[in-house]
Image 1 (cartoon, one colour):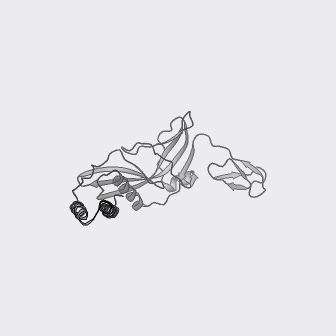
Image 2 (cartoon, one colour; image 1 turned 90 degrees about the vertical axis):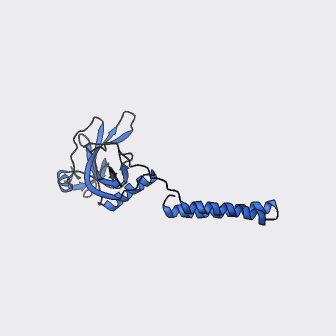
Image 3 (cartoon, one colour; image 1 turned 135 degrees about the vertical axis):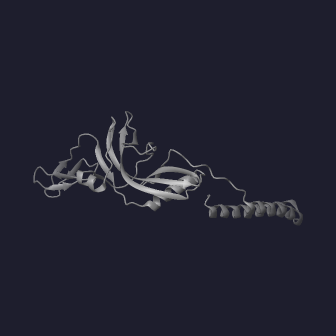
Length: 233
């Protein structure tokens, strides 16, 4: 945005949140007038469908849900209201319908915010705010990825907020079935047999305990390597 110096007439650019700047032409102090009503800001973001889909995959994996096998991603810049309550706490809620995903955004995405003017709104094709609730101090236009995906027969939709990569989902796919891991079962049987054999080889109790502790540590290390390779830790 531009503030015109009242002394020299020079135009000075200022950033969101600034209340006082110094004129770059004559050095005069300029007070920035706050606009009436909520400030309209937009978060700078470069579209990246792959990162959004990766965020959804990680979100489902952390909750032990089935992984998406097919995804279709759409992208919009949607309005959200930053609302401040009497205690000074803020929440960020959609200011336009987002299908069935009407939940609040847990965290404000970090990044570069710019003021929205008519030219910006037209070039970015911003979705306008449908309703401004009382207490709204800012209208934030955030990048939103809407991902329609399938996990076998189950179909669902999720939203991913750009920059912070937070996932909003009203429905969750079924939990993953835990199939018996034959390799780990055989490894457990082998370790048990090894413990029995070590008990016969060692000549006394301390030696037996030391051998069993070493074998247990080796088994745990192998199990950890297996889980990391499978992406579960």
